[in-house]
Image (cartoon, rainbow, N blue to C red; front, side, top):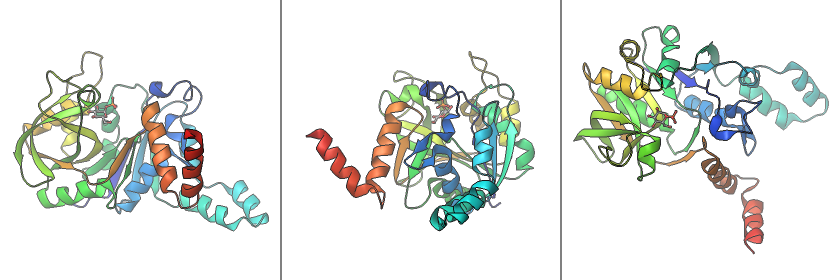
Length: 288
Ligand code: G1P
């Protein structure tokens, strides 16, 4: 069971990013010089996966254009002799094989993933939320795939969260700790809050699923807001097969909210080969 396919749910309104997302998809907001979603695509490609399904919705056509060829732009760049840019622009459309699936009704992350059942066609799939930029030596999703290949069961990414985090993320209950970084999951709850949280281990937007996830999603009831949560679907899956969690190694920037986005932008700018030095100087001078 090799993981050859990945799903990126990108249909949401991006309300946490208004007004920037009023007329453009959140996933297209640039972090330095690349749109947010390109970081996720590069993570997937870095894990050896080339088939990517993006779950989109109305108003998201810029995502499709970004990963498509851009013949007029390419001719223009060639004529101007801007070969570096030409190579970069061409590279984007060659990154992977993209499919786009429209989600007409935004009924939650579980429902968005269910839209890709046909794309998965009975094979295991990775799922990655494009809000997060993971900056890891081994791509975060690859760290999960390694555990998936060893255990032949679904795997989720975990990170330690604080009290606030228990309101923002799914939280797991540990059945057994198998190593420093790998846990068998007993149960989980979607954004339980500090009083009801089983642990401080949050689910941070990266998943590798066995094909049975789709049946589990179909059996999952909607929550109080009418949404089908992937966390609830994984609980259904837990009735018939084990699920593992991996504490990832590396850094994660939650670019789905304004402050996390600023943190990610500054951190990545400081590491950037061209801008790192000048950005450090700018920050120093701004701080006086
Ligand atoms: C979703 C999941 C949640 C997970 C989070 C990670 O929530 O439902 O379990 O912890 O992604 O980013 P959302 O951020 O879409 O509300």
